[in-house]
Amino acid sequence: MDPEVFEEWMMTGLITGLVLFMAFIVWDLAKKSHAGRFGTMVLFLALGLGVLGFVIKTLVIGSLEGLQVIP
Image (cartoon, rainbow, N blue to C red; front, side, top):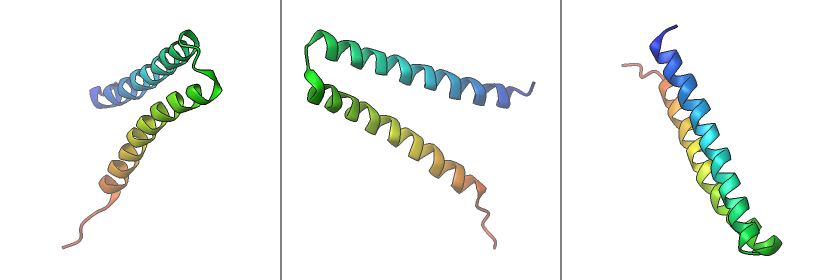
């Protein structure tokens, strides 16, 4: 297996695992602090915006790499 492919798979898998772990931490924090529905939604919205920013950054970089500048 090519090291670049392995690195890409590991990066995707480990970041997905990290996001899921952070979601668990936020859920546990909301439960222990008795945040209620609105507080839990606000906590997950903040986490979701961070994840959305990471996904958008990945998509933009991928689309820019696909573009070819013609001299």
